[in-house]
Length: 272
Image 1 (cartoon, helix red, strand yellow):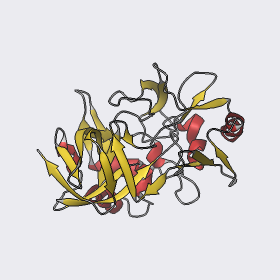
Image 2 (image 1 turned 135 degrees about the vertical axis):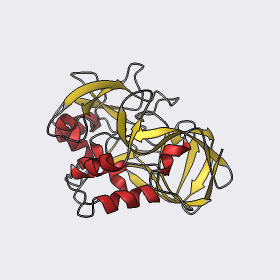
Image 3 (image 1 turned 90 degrees about the vertical axis):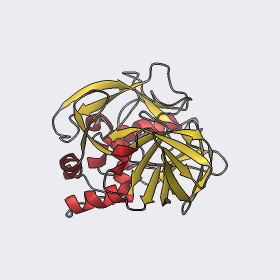
Image 4 (image 1 turned 90 degrees about the horizontal axis):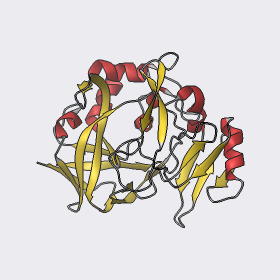
């Protein structure tokens, strides 16, 4: 048994998101999550802060999904612009310093660049990867519809890096859960199991979540650059994934098998 202690969504890929008290879950994930992304007009790739050399500025902006269905972006200077405004592409292009367009339709061949290895933002090489391989619909999630982390894992990371700002927002989860008697990185052992929230929503755990460079990057004014965040995670939890080498993992990817409305404070169970 346990409890859902935090809910969040990120309406525009790689921008800061919003904390929620309740959310509707369906096969695409949290309603309104990763609904939009910027497309780089020069390369045709999805703009992602996984390539921090080009796109870290995205994290200086924040997006929220209003009750009326419109998405609003707040720029670093505090100005706001609606996603459906004709001038949105020009405004966002000025902020990121490249010609981009905002879209809510995921291209069939959608791809992005990511830094490898992610623990050293100042070095490494860029590789290309696809998006949303485990998720139906048009959203711009990295792989699966839901990202979940336990409080035990977050607490272990904070102990490993006490001088840093080990804020949950660095890891951009959708659900943060407190599970009775959970050990740090218990998510590693949940593959194939089902998390039931409030007795209705069913979320099947797919795999531990391999981490990119994003947790090390500044987000707004209150989360500074901190490369040691990912180094701390690497010391604690490296997991072989998909018959590959061990990767630094925090949290787990999951698919929604039965949707419903969930709220902070809801009880959860982990079923076989």
